[in-house]
Length: 416
Image (cartoon, rainbow, N blue to C red; front, side, top):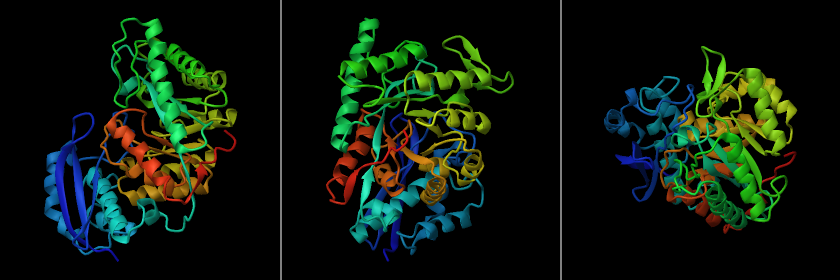
């Protein structure tokens, strides 16, 4: 077994310039794995707590005092690592050790084991997979909400998925092509467009929601593709950020519109049908399992996906699955805490036929581990963004993985 022989930790900065924690794990005195914890701008209330008392410095200091407890462990034993963390922190949300530590430590350990065992990262996580399919890159090409500035759409992400592509290189190329064409589409209606982008690299124009999706559709058509069948669109509504619980309304502040739950359901369903969306993330707020179930039933050809609804939490899947509240699930390891938590979540989703979409966060690093995690969990899509070094690093890793010779092709998107 690869044995953990040393651990180092440090404060670093993510793509938004915020402090976060990076951990190095060395196995057998020479095989070093590294992982940096990301962070989200749109955060579900059931997510793991990134830092002790929201203080990365205190979180780092605390881990320095306890990191010796992990020496001697098998760096490839994800469950053993998880159990040792839970011995130290018995809280539900990792508030005593910090979710950032739980994330970085477990991923760095598997990274180290991968190098020691001389097998790909995804193979350490899923050794029985002799042949795999690559996830489709789900690209954020236009942004609003918490990921962009004032004047941008209320909805958080307008996305594209190149289902026409036969391989990962073609898929990445098509997403990049649409992203570039979209800039031209925006320029046609806004001659003062300054080429501003949101946190994840999607263009951030001063337009309302309906116009935003029309612009994306136009860019796809201009590039010679059919948005109904070849390069399909998606939306991350991030509805929990719009929901005013006291008023019982979804408040689209930038657009000056408020919708009841019934109106929100109708609005989301209308967008799915009118634009043949392949993907709709968090179209209702994080507690509205019943409305999500209605939307899922009404739209079998769209991945109605839970992010804030599920927060990569196995217990939330156990609520959603009997209700058929979603057909897709976002997997973000740092929502869960440890990588073991995330893998258990993935097992639960797969056993309930809920398709997995492995995702980056808006505050990212150049780490590429989620490309391997997407493969190990049989994810049908991966959300990485389209441009920016911290986004492209994940896409380039998929290209490298495609050289291994074990790849069957792209993921199977049956029924959508």
